[in-house]
Amino acid sequence: MRSILVLNGPNLNLLGTRQPDIYGETTLAMIEETCARHGAALGLAVTFRQSNHEGVLIDAIHDARDTHDGIVLNAGAYTHSSIALRDAISSVDVPVVELHLSNIHAREDFRHLSHIAPVALGQICGFGAHGYALALEALKAHLEGVDR
Ligand code: CA2
View 1 (cartoon, rainbow, N blue to C red):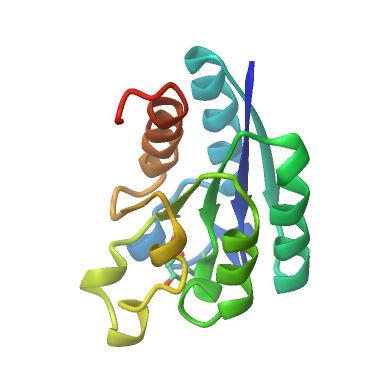
View 2: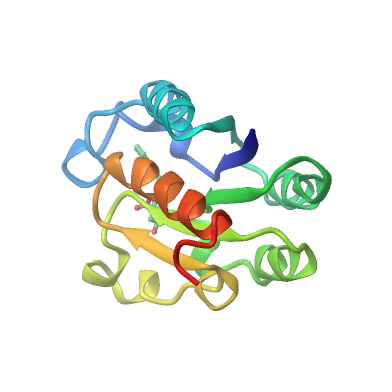
């Protein structure tokens, strides 16, 4: 069974508690449950993690080299600031789907730049929590060679 790491960055532990107009009412625990269930239906084993710390996210990406076939990454605000995260993705041979709950291109200008996008397989944004299921499907299709 293929193994996918779903990795979430800063402040996403607060999902469902504040700013529901932007990020919805779904909590991160609910998203984790959906990922596990949807992943199982797709034949994927899903490991779910969240950290508020850039270095922890970088370590998780490095560790994925030996343990996971793909990564779904919601890097939160580090998306717009972290060249170190971009370099971490470039340094491992693991496909990454960039994920955002909100449509970052329809928000403030500073959210339009993603340092992740140039080194990601693709980007999914604007579909709320459902984006995680879409990202798992995209990774499965990629890993099975459907999109080649
Ligand atoms: O839309 C997304 O998923 C984002 O990655 C979320 C980040 C934001 O900085 C990115 O531009 C887009 C912010 C996550 C903060 O999540 C909160 C959730 C509830 C309450 C406060 C923050």
